[in-house]
Image 1 (tube, helix red, strand yellow):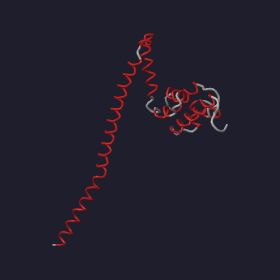
Image 2 (tube, helix red, strand yellow):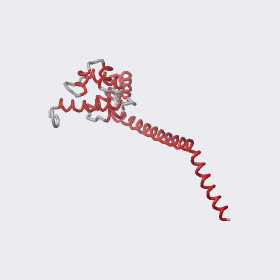
Image 3 (cartoon, one colour):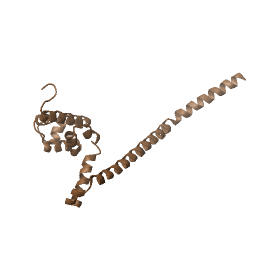
Image 4 (tube, one colour):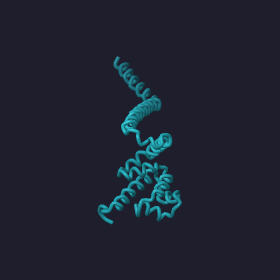
Length: 178
């Protein structure tokens, strides 16, 4: 099959192939390792990774478990044609976390969920986005500060030796000129 796939199923298969391969490689796993972890023959896994046939959600969940990735993120990446969603949330499992929170809300509110205004949810999500952004900024500043201090501690002897060399050289020259 050359060129751009022409049918929706073929395009979906190509996108699935891209997503699965990207996640597997990011986890530094071989096809054999993933197939074994999914408890399926290698050839069956290879066909799945190539996007052959209809989408099998069971296999997608098994793949998520085998690669320690987010099954919801895999589905969202495929549905919205955004492979980076699967990659960016590989460790945080953020879409799965959202699903768990949504399920808790569903369990608590039940059918009244239908009258929740989208603006209320969006407002809460925006506040959450601000908090996450602040957290990441503090984390980055903390990591940078830690690295600067660690660098200074590790190389403080070199800096002190260099300063002594400069002072020593200047002193020797001054003494020899007098």
